[in-house]
Length: 114
Image 1 (spheres, rainbow, N blue to C red):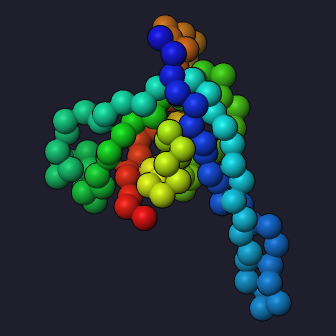
Image 2 (tube, helix red, strand yellow):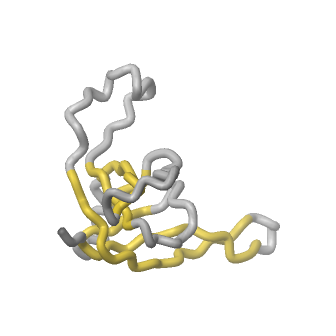
Image 3 (spheres, helix red, strand yellow):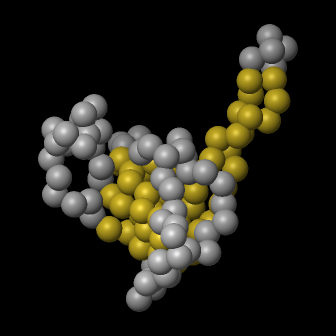
């Protein structure tokens, strides 16, 4: 089994303006071998999602991913920059010595129009 190559867009503070307000820039990172899956059929009103956050896709990152935290990042799938996915929450890799597959981190994301 082999995944797809996606682009992670991370917003990073690059300085401050004249008013001492933070200025941000986007950093792009290409991540190969990411499995893209539909979310499970859990209802958004389920007790596990008290704020009703909808999940449109699950990106399963490879075990060898060494990039930074994905909180607040955008994910570009199949080059579609007009419709990015937005990471939900704070994804953490599965740990504890279990190595049944090449993928160890499930990243839930929402899909936005525009």
